[in-house]
Length: 237
Length: 237
Image 1: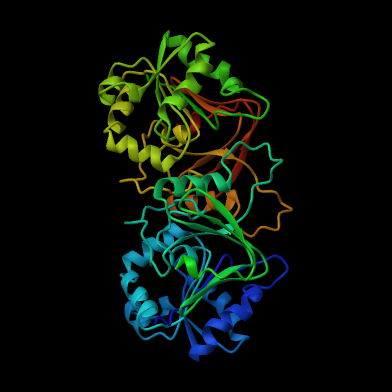
Image 2: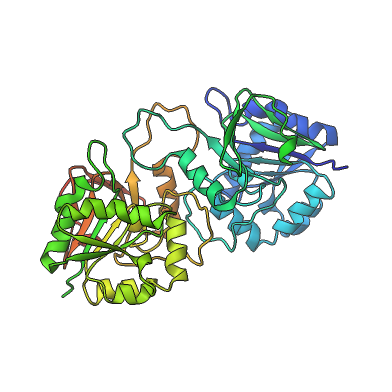
């Protein structure tokens, strides 16, 4: 029986809330059962590691958690091996996955989460890298990573910051749904369109959609389905 | 003295016009001086090569041009070598560049355009692949290409379908400007944000912005500048 504790947030910011504030209950829900005191934060998706870590620390310290930046450790692999919980923040998914490969962190994080069951929190790019692959990121491919394969903590893909395109737009660029459709057509893998303010919570053997909005599931078969808030997503795992 | 004839369209469609109709004058401007009769069309960015080629053929045949799909030739490299003009259409940039590499077309197309001066037309993904790299595509990375390096027909990058983000949006995903800014920050290379309905026209030694709208230049230094319609872009080449 798996005891994975994985929280995959669509976004760290939601209109009307302070940074991560909308996800307080969800974050505590994944950290409290494991009695986590210190969270290892991975700021690789943005450029300024110190200021990014401070932003996350300012949010989580209010709720009683200590935050350490992985870059403050001389050996990042060792830091993950001795961590109580890992939080990978958003930014550019290509920069993030490339750095995770360069620092040999893919296998180590995977083992800690899937075998040792330390809690994993991801937001935005940190959610993309937790899935099968980064193929369904919205980010610009600003750097060339050695692979699009990701941590594979869950056996499906996620599109964070999911939103429908305004039906009245005159813009002729592809819509988000068309983009996700291209991926599904190519790979026949399910993609969960995760709206801002929502998250996927893997609590041991049960996986659910958390947050106040529905999610749109793009099935590998090409069909789509709106899943209401609170939906049981265990069938995807 | 270079006699390159290169037309890089932001999009093949513009609201209120038939397919490619908004670009009729620009397309004829690049094909007529070389007395092109037959255009070799590269439909690799979409899935159905036949129907895509027919769409382009239907548009260009009205103006007196014959269109052949590269996939109708048994040897695509040979087809490019004997072509009068090459048109690479839009779709998914990652699928397109991967296919160009797989079919060994990168060097051949480059030589034909830069050395033999056959006209090149690109739209959307076909414009992305004509620049230094595909780093500034808007497309979802649905497949992993062997490189992000592109045809390098022009020495800068382009963001097709460029648009400003609605300032009133509550969505917290990154804006287009933020995404392009990430690339510039990483590579210090200029990116031209090319709005739908506009194009870059390289006519020998002179490069201009064509079409009715301004373009936004993101300079390698981090500064930005709006360039009015008709701007001389030779300084970028």
